[in-house]
Image 1 (spheres, rainbow, N blue to C red):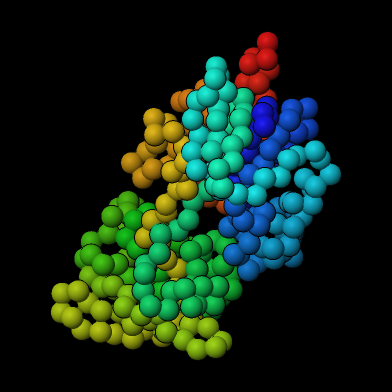
Image 2: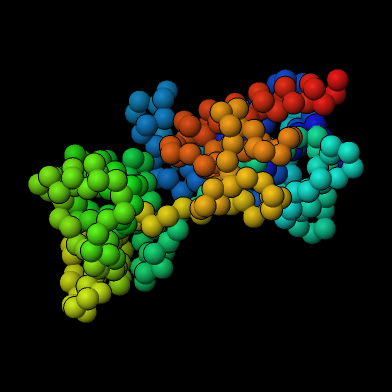
Length: 309
């Protein structure tokens, strides 16, 4: 089946891209391997998306996004895209699971990224019950409480500083004795009176009960000494991994594998656009994903106008 545009991924960026594309009058297929909504489905409550001053649950926002698209003639395709490659002329061939295939004049990749896990016992069991990967999203739920942050890069330091203004105390756990983050953040971390540095240490276990996590077992890698720290939340920042393995190998990526684009979401392969968390950028929020999706769709529409000329 040939479409003007195929959007891969139905998170905020993908749904927005599909909405803008179909409203421009082109034929659109939206491929999604899971339920529409992407990562917001795993977010208990979203308090910083404009238009919802009393907050909104992640699944509710996902349903609203999906409902907005429901009235338009977008072909919904359930499945996983295994590869995208050049076909005849300027067309792209998308190979899906179960031997299926789609063709498109333009492709908008919106498959996002997932947080790299620690791999510590208890991490999966307490996901959403104390274990978080987004302080901006979930930090306010721990106002006045004690939490831990794991990591040594800019993200970990920034989020530890953010949390220090909300919570009672932050334990900043890092496996090395020196941080990798910018010195300006390191200086602020050391000036904060409610941030305790737990360096040269790794999390051996995340503990708790039916109500959620209540502590972390931390081991000093130099002395071998184990310490149990009572915290109600742990925010993990040990890196992100883009979902981009299906894209052509030659597409331009940064060292971490995120797709590089220009300001219009164009990749270095004409006709392939990237939006949302898949893209190399600093801010990974629902609002920025929506903006990326709209920008990518606008650029793709312009590309299709030239393609059809």
